[in-house]
Length: 106
Image (cartoon, rainbow, N blue to C red; front, side):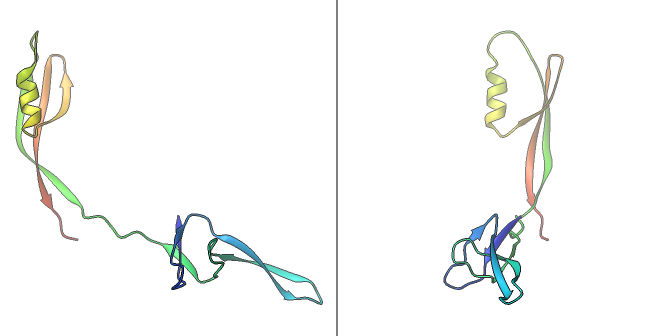
């Protein structure tokens, strides 16, 4: 959880608010604790909620199953350079998928 100082001169983000001890009545010696900004000691703070990131949904454009052989795997390297990702590996086969990113509007 993060907090943000609402003071115009500060405006910083922080993880842990400072605690200020405030005396309510000196005769009775009654005190209370107040959360404040650790930088400027302003009590005008609020919980900071980060703006949501744009979500992407990956649709599969193409699927390829590559059989392993002995020696150099240059064809597998070429497929990975083309944008294929290894999804699964079983026995002597690689299951590759080429994702197609699509923007999702919230």
